[in-house]
Every structure is written in structure tokens, then in C-alpha cells.
Length: 308
Image 1 (cartoon, one colour):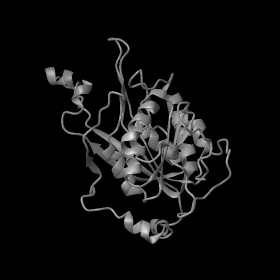
Image 2 (cartoon, one colour; image 1 turned 180 degrees about the horizontal axis):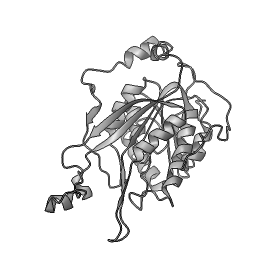
Image 3 (tube, rainbow, N blue to C red; image 1 turned 45 degrees about the vertical axis):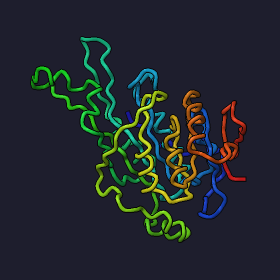
Image 4 (tube, one colour; image 1 turned 180 degrees about the vertical axis):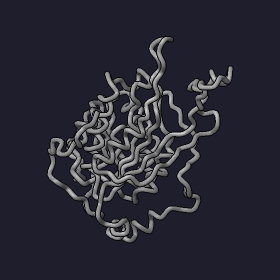
């Protein structure tokens, strides 16, 4: 089933191009459906999107959609709105992996969905240029807990081979621009470019060895180290990083620690509450500096994302 690109979704705000050094988007945490919240972001005002979309029905408590096509259509709408929010030539990075849909009974087979490849099709149709595929490799044995491959290990029958998954994709795209990367670097203040230089010890190949993260507050949290690397490699200090599926705020935390601003949206109230509680440990500034949207217990609720 094919879909037309989602051009022209409800443009509520006028075009706004943020020039480095000009007033920036405020640090913002919003609770609600990203498809709605993203429409409040001025066009071309974000410098990087890094996100890990919710799995398709991989865990009943995490995300549920009636059909896989419904899930992909939702992701398409959100990716399209992210494209609108991104400034020209900026990067859009997704952490994703295939998902196993468990069989409903013993007489039926399970199904493995190649979500990263469907995301790739959507991204290229929505105006992103493909740049790189990074492989996030976890330590050996990390995927054994999924149970995949245990039957083959027991009897070794051909056709039953299923390797335990120890990798995920980090797909790197760029909002189309006719200008070279060098132009986008030169337009920034020289002191910001110098301060953002990557130190020794950076990843030299597209295979990144990073241990997975775990949290009792979220079933599928990704490691802060992964977010930090993406933010350092694909944005500059003082840039604004957007995560439309914020979970418990890992992207915001990594952005702040690397001197970037953040906009994070999350639909689950319990994750927002965990986000707020954890923020006191890494955000020493007055919490009122953060723009809270639809967060009833927050001290500030404001629909304006621009700095006053």
C-alpha cells in the first residue's frame, strides 16, 4: 500500500528561519500527541531531530495500533512535521530495529516486521536525503533475553535458525539542501564552530559498541551515550534538538549536557512525571526556565516556544 507524501499538513505558524545568534527556541517539554504539538513549532526553527519511535505492538503496554499500516501512517505524519520544523540542511536521525509480532496461537507463526526499511522509504518520500546507516551493537548475549534462537540452540534443526538480535539501526538523514555542508558550517559563528569540534576518541566506523540502558520507568529506553554521540556529531553547541517521542527525557538530558537546547514531546503522563523528577538531577537551573506545555502540575504552561 502506497501513500502520497504528507505535504502541507495544517500550517498553523508562519515560516520562521532561525539564524545563529538570533533569539532561539525555548527549552520545552510538552505532553500530548506529537502530531498536534509539532504544529506549534515554527517552520525551519530546529537544528537536529533525534528520536526512537515507539515500537509497533512489540509490548502491549508500550504502543498499540490496529494495523501495521496505521502505525506507518502515523509515523509518516510525524516525520513530515519534523521535516517542516527542521532548518534546511539539518539532520534527522532515527533509532529503530525490526520488531517481532508474537504468534497468537501455536498453529500460527510469528511475524518479524522490517520497520527500519519501511521508515527509510517514508523518509525518502518525505524530502529527506539518506546519509548513513549506523549499526548500534550491544554486548554479546544482550539479545538472548528475547528468546529468539533458543529453539535452534536446543535441537539445531535446519530452517529453525534465528540469530539473537544484538544490533539496532541508527538511520541518518538530512533535510534536502542544494548547498554543501561547508556552507552550513560557515554560516555559524566561528566561536561556536570551534567550541563544537569533536574530541579524539570519536566513532570512526558505522558500528558503535554501546551497552543498552534499562529503566524500571520505561520498557524501551535507549542509552544516553547513544543520544550524546548523535547530538555531538550532527549539531553544534547552542543548536536546538527535537525529540517527538521523548519517553523519560534521555534526548533532552544529553542535549543539555552538550550545551544544546531541547524540545521534547511525550504522550504518556507517567513518563513526563519521571522526566520532571529526573530533571532536577541534571538541570540545575530554575525549572521555570523550561516551557511546560499541557503539564498541569508545572509552574509554567505556555504555548509560545520562542524565547521572550
